[in-house]
Each structure stands twice: as C-alpha cells, then as structure tokens.
Length: 330
Image 1 (cartoon, helix red, strand yellow):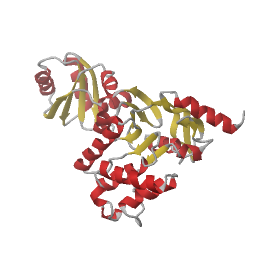
Image 2 (tube, one colour):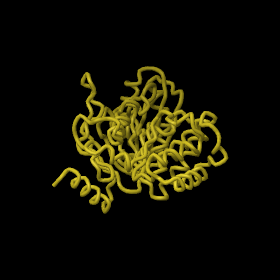
Image 3 (cartoon, one colour):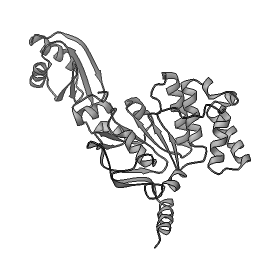
Image 4 (cartoon, helix red, strand yellow):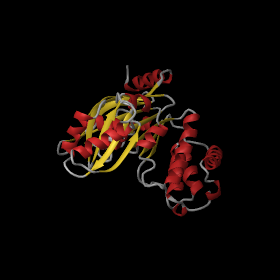
C-alpha cells in the first residue's frame, strides 16, 4: 500500500470515529535535554471542548504546537482528523484552525479582509468567502467594524476576529492557545459566550489554559498536565470528585505553618489532608458542622493567630495541589 493510500484510509476511518484527535506517546525534548512533553497519550472526541490545564511551562503550548504541525515531535505520533500531522503536515493544516497566543492578524488589511483572504487562501470561491465573512462578522459581533483597520480593535475584539478567522474554512478541530490571557473580565466573558455557541454547533475545540475558572466553565473534559506529563484526565466534575473530600478550609496565619499543620492533623476531626501553599494551609475534609470554630481553637491553643479563613468546595486547583503539592499559579 502506498503512503497516500494509507493517509486516505486513515482519514476515512476517522470520519466514522468519535475520536478526532489522538496522540501516542507524544514527546518533545528541546536542546539541552529539556523534556517539554513526556509520553503524552490523549484522545479528543468529536464535538467536545477539551482543555489542557496546567501552569506556565507545563508543556501545553508545545503539545498544541505538535498537534498543529508547528513543532516537530522528538518521538511519538499525533493524528488530527485521521491525518498523521508529522507525515502529512499540509493535509493536516486543511482540517485545523489555530488561534495562537500572539496577535497574528494582518495589520495591512481591514477586519473583513482578514476573513475574506483567509477563506480564499483555503480555496473558497470569491462569493463563498464574502458570504462566510459576512456571517462570521455577525456571529462574532464585529459587523459594525468590518471596514476598520485591525489596529483599531480592542484586545477582546481582536481575539474574537482571530477565532472567526480560524474557523473560516470550517476546520474539524479548533486550537486555542491561552485564548483569554491578557483580556479584561468583560472581554473574557464575551469570548466564553462565543466559544459556547461554537460548541453548541458541534465544533471540536482544544484549548490550553492556566485559568481554573475557564477550564471549569468551558471544558467537557480536560487533562491536567505538569512538566509535560499527564497527571489526571476527566470531566471537571469527575476531577473534583476525585479529591475524596467536599470541603476545603483555607487558613492564613503567621509563624511555623508546618507545625500548625501538624496540630490541625492531630486535633481537628475529619481532616483528610493538610497542604501548605505559600503562606496558607489547605485543610481538606468531609463536610461537618462546627469545624471552623475548632480550627480557631486549635490554632489559638498552639499560639497562632489566624489572619484569614475561608470555606469552599474543592476546585480544579485543589485537584492540582493534591497531585503536585503546589499551587496551579506557581
């Protein structure tokens, strides 16, 4: 069988499969021995928003780069739409849309021209490109800016235009690398709303993020990664349930927090785990009444003055701390 025939067969097989993206022991080692991605095995299903959640430097952008042909893997394989992205990068680019972290809009073109010429580049007819440009400008709330230069757009508007451009050619999978980094809260919510609309239309989306709220709000499933390794995989609800607790008491106090943690473990009933993060202690427990007064009493009896205390349900950050012993923001 020829190489071309193999590629066609893989694409045909994937057309009937629920899996639109797959990695097999995907690895990237940079010069100097820096292992950015280490044996990553993932599957992304058709129509879901799949998140790669982890701190800066976890390997999220490198993973997305390998899946979108911009980074060559050291070893392992990656498939998008049934296409081996290393063996057939040109074919792979036809079935993916990419929104990188940096603004790559053409500043010599207007808002509408950025969409129109992107469509033409991907083989759309002139009439088809104009019609799709008009439709996307309406959907992305940019119709009133169609003739303006892209330099006149706010950061949130420019990001929406980049997403619109990325789906202009109807890609099988849309890649978003830290899509809301640097956006103000209002712009972030506006982009979340549009991504929700695309998801409702059946668009498969892979996004990288270090924002817990973003992953929790948007993702059907997500992979938590750190130092290039997969630590956990599941829905946000499944991952939070995996902590085995339903209440997190966060205590801030001055002094020897390691000693205070030992006192909490010994004298606070029902404590499953105590983890130190910066100048705070996280007490993981099953819900029960009267715990906060007990926490204050134990601290006071051991000579500590609590400066702040809060009670919350487990979050994705709780999951990350349980897995790594450090804050997701580190």
